[in-house]
Amino acid sequence: MPLASFTRARLACASFFAASCLGWSLLLSRLPALKAQTQASEAEIGLALLAIGASGLAALLSSARILGRTGSRKACLFGTLGMLASLPLAALAQTPLQLSLLLAAFGFAMALVDMAANTQGMLIEKRYRKPAMSVLHAFYGLGVLAGSLSGSLCAGLGLGPFANVICAFLPFALLLPWAHRHLQQDEPRKAEERRGKAQKKRPPAFVVFCGLAVMCAYAAEGAAGDWGSLFLATCKGADEQTAALAYGAFGTAACACRFFGDRLRSRLGERPLAVAGSLAAFGGVAILLWGSSPWICLGGCLLLGAGLSPIGPIYFSLAGRVPGVDPVRASACVSTLAYGALLVFPAILGGLAQAFGLDRALLLPLLLCALLSLASFVALAPQALRDSRPGPANRTPAP
Image 1 (cartoon, rainbow, N blue to C red):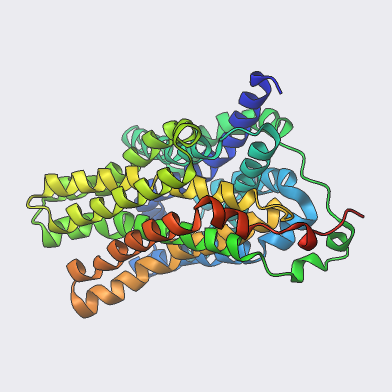
Image 2 (image 1 turned 90 degrees about the vertical axis):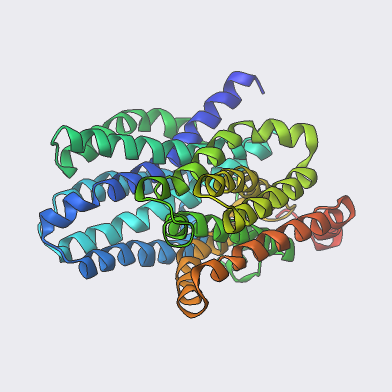
């Protein structure tokens, strides 16, 4: 295939990765304005955010069935249209109830786009036989950055949430027909899948392992995102401005490194990169925990972001390449485990922090990074990878 075709496919898919995080970042950046507009209390805002998480989890749990019926290409389109409709309406909400209901619709659509985009990334790698997932995941960070900058700029200009959402989403809405046209066609479904029998099969053990590996990485990411700034402020004596840089340092490093991740995968191989990244993440959490100053701890956040940056792309890619497994099922399994960690793990850390202190609670992500490095070393050995794949006797014959 010509390079231009691969580039178009990757850019088209990347736009959907960016769109989901653009909407999420826009929402978080204008949350104070939405709170004032709806006259909601802190508890009501918390319920609205919970509605996003609950509906997103519902989308993940039903994603295999939805994508099995519509295909990832149509799911990207329908999910994006859902985001383009629900978030502007949420920006017009006048009551906390309206806000919660519309954000629940937005959360479902956002999770659907995310799932379908990861499936498209697997299809691109299978079709072109080139690494692509790392660059695609880098566009998560670009979406977050674009949403944050847009929210800051529009707030400074005195524009309300609705005008902000329209200004930020309009370029992508104009790009949507082109992006959808260059998405990959889904793989033909087998006869037993059309009858719905394949949905009852359990995913192979190696696909589940890939999901657990990404779960560990996302759990450590959640620690930096949800608790990093609070840890710097309460345990390291950082001022508010310095503490606020914790997740920014993590996200910047992760996004920047992912633009080089595919090239490193081609040169180094997946096993060395996954092991080295996990060990770097372990070192990042260790520096964050035991750094002598807030600025050294921010260096730990940078190292944590750089270390975790290849983990998700590598394991999503490996799951999508297991012979005999539909990329839709592989993506659904990995995504459900991974994003479930983002929803549940911060709350678990909160409970541990309440019981033992935040500094001791953050020993858990340190342990997860250590387990991830060991598991990557063992499970990604060439012989282990061969053993994880279905043999000829286990493959379903073509109908």
